[in-house]
Image (cartoon, rainbow, N blue to C red; front, side, top):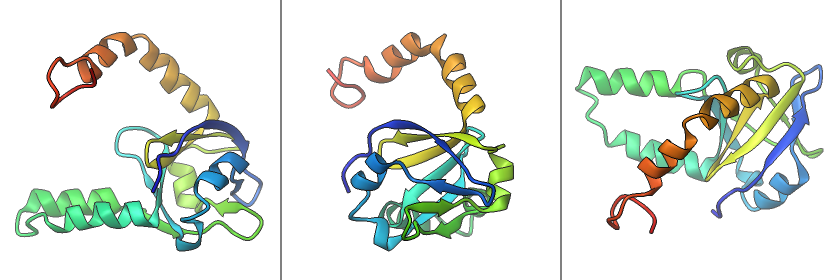
Length: 156
């Protein structure tokens, strides 16, 4: 699958349906028929939308964990908690299940943001707050993550 690019302001209707932005639908056109998995983010109050092929790759990696270690079982259980299979309907809408809407504080105005190979779905106010909070330290973070001099850890 190609990488996904873009950040879009959207709205959720009263039934919890998100009209996928045309640019995102175009980028995902080859994987839309396979469906998606929607889950809670680990680090933020947002949702992560995985194309089924990306979810399967992740699950194959997780399946290699030793399930006789309690921490691995706990991790798998917590990581997959609330995950739901979802589809884009013929009108280009995605239904966000109620429990996930509550988790991410999604009301009407949302942001759909690419995150390399998945999509994040945020309440608009929480997204803007997360971007503002991260902006203060972003230069330092960028240097630490991307500024390594060796080929193994950074881009040069």
